Image (cartoon, rainbow, N blue to C red; front, side, top):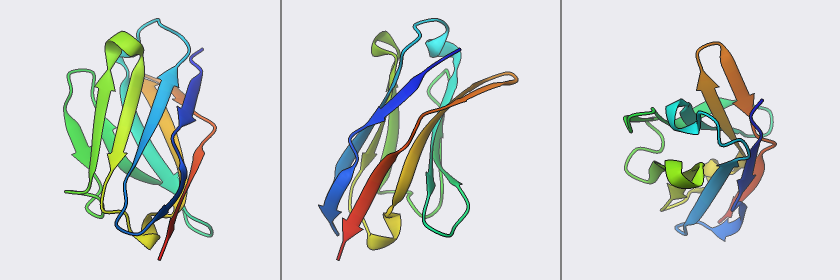
Length: 116
């Protein structure tokens, strides 16, 4: 069992920045997990925002390319999402996910609200 705890959400004006963090409570195997950030806006399906593999390969949704950066610090069992040039359409609950083989773990989510 891996517990994921997100932090860093909040209210920001359009054009601003936020950095989300997701810390894994379990130290075991974090470095080999694929980590990802998802988001879910009201009335919409949860969507993949960015992912990072165990070897650091990254992938981004087209809507955030060039604005968001995912990174990980295996020594701290933490994955980050740096969000720049935020838009009102980035408003959502952001979830951290860790996956390894058939195992998938989710955090509780953190709210990001971007005002115009």
